[in-house]
Length: 288
Picture 1: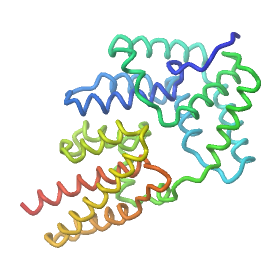
Picture 2 (picture 1 turned 120 degrees about the horizontal axis):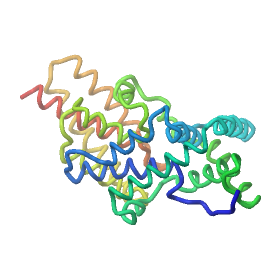
Picture 3 (picture 1 turned 120 degrees about the vertical axis):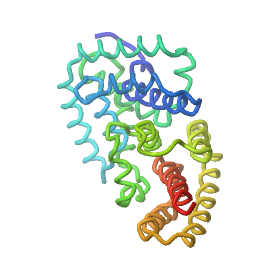
């Protein structure tokens, strides 16, 4: 066991986030295939040690509990699961993953992308590595890391995220292993379940990916986009006869109305806007 600092490039959660950002960047750059997509699906499958550890990261980043006691209990359960991961295989997989990333992308540019939940990911890394004995951190660092996780696990999230209707659920179920909702849409697009991204959708993704660290500007953009697409859908609903499409429009309008950026822009806000524009395209194809 040796002493070390948190390593951005050894953090399973951050590696996953950086790959999803790179996939988005590749697609928006007009590349037919993203090498980052192939790398992600190669190393983060459910049966790989990286895939198993990422699921634990994902749980701690996204789960919510009512109080500190339940959050602390959840961390203990996750640590028990972390013990079952084969560290030797995990280290080897991570070494191969990092090597493949370095061979594919300029490493400085790849690591430059900001991570929204960086502090939480760093805390998970410290708690995990210390618990299984891979790396030794100071006691105060582990104490602070665990407190950070507990505070995150009991913080109040936007209730809209837990009330998504069946329309959004159908779309999201297509790519369960991918956490970022905007990225889920892109994966579905790559699978040719939808038509190519139009300029509006590309612009939303560009603003979201590039503006993730500047909350003020992205919040203003999301609200403007919400109002714009709501007006367009409200206008188009009067132009069609199909009851099926009218139901879809009303479902999406309902989701658009629930977008509240008071606590920041959420991944599902972006997803709703992307789906809204997809529906606009569907309607325009129907009435032409």
